[in-house]
Image (cartoon, rainbow, N blue to C red; front, side):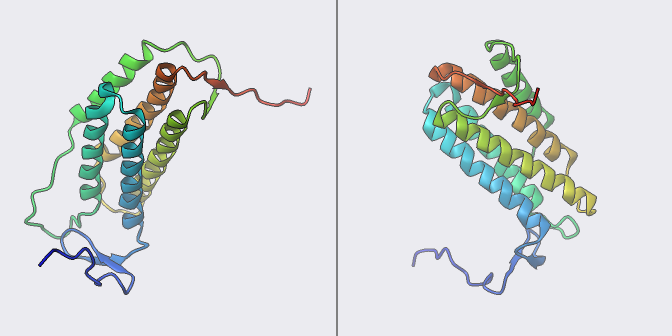
Length: 188
């Protein structure tokens, strides 16, 4: 018999963390790792849109790190688990920084804020950046509610949003899409 995707255990509005603790489906922890999952889906769509071998493996690696972060956020640290969970390393953050530096070196200097847009891929990357910032804010909120969150999780999400901003600019350049400068309306 094939594995069934539905279990019916969440029909009452609760779900289980890694470790077995039951929490409401609107728990801040669920909202946080659900947002990381949403971000992961956006990264997948960006990878499909770009279909650029220079980024395919890199974006899949980021998706892997996001699954790692999701599992870290879904774990009840007060209860033990026999599962071996994946690790996040400082080198993961450093890798993002190296890629940001590489792309930035090939981009023109920014002279103003830029508006998201110019190409659907660029816009998608900016949406992913916004979702990443939301995931970061939610992870900080978890910390403020005394839920243990590895500082490296917040650091990675922070750097990933910078990476996505830079990737949006870089992808725009590769696609020949002009950046759209923000020209604030002033009364004067």
